[in-house]
Length: 413
Image (cartoon, rainbow, N blue to C red; front, side, top):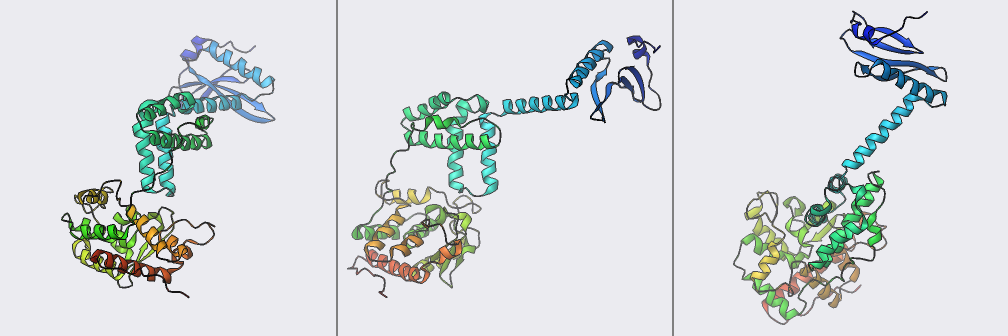
């Protein structure tokens, strides 16, 4: 007759040089380790394969408790379910539930931002604006809420606060950013649905307004003369002088690096990662543009950026510098902006008869058919663009001089 196991016997069991087992019944035993730990184990078989199930440690789990756990496991096995697999599934579900509960909207949103940054396919300006909208308008209200618990009505009420404060476009764009976070979270298994789909007809983006620009030749001449008389920082003046000659986007201009320029070849090669469309761009430089850059090289050529910041050369010029300089020259926000130099060139060059496709390529607009390779795209109409950029610079020089200007059109044939 097998010896009856009691709690007293288990408590008195002493560790030995090697681990040993105290059998209880039907494969249940207590494993006594040399370090003194006593662990409940059950040895069983599934489809002929031997398996081991941990049932806790003694005396935290008493003999009676161990017998009860053992019986529950045997019942599962009799029903055709592997107790070890059942426990593994329950643990995984518990871990997932805890992870989901700890996934606040802010935590998921910041992970999404880090994911986009690692991919490197989002413009720095776009990423910065998304971060600002999240931190200023969404995190303060729903940032600490589990993302799975946020409802469409809750998000609607948050966005409505911005809209009622007169920030309709901000509310619309915050909804778009929130939607990107939710859709990414769905694909990552961190929430169940994109709740912003219910807000589709709410917080629509207002119709875009055209950026202020000057296209009247006489007023362009006045602007160029005002820039020539600018009394601020020489680097800022050089940026103002170069802007109409190259008409790139303000961010592309202020972040220009000396390594991108070949002044002998009169060419500026902007790498794709700095372009809005993520494709490299070529900017033929007129003789006037080269002269401005050669003069500027004596001031900033020893550094990284063509237009370094005022406070530190390790960072580019502030994005507000050009617009602030225009205000200083007396041009209001509804009269002229840094981005307006692009519209100025596009309008006048088209009116002067230059090839519309060459103008579009020089503006670095996306190619409609999306077929051509990036470098092929960058070099399209290049010879014609070189003539156009020099012709444009000569035209602006005539306007600045205040004389009668004959528009320089492209050569036929």
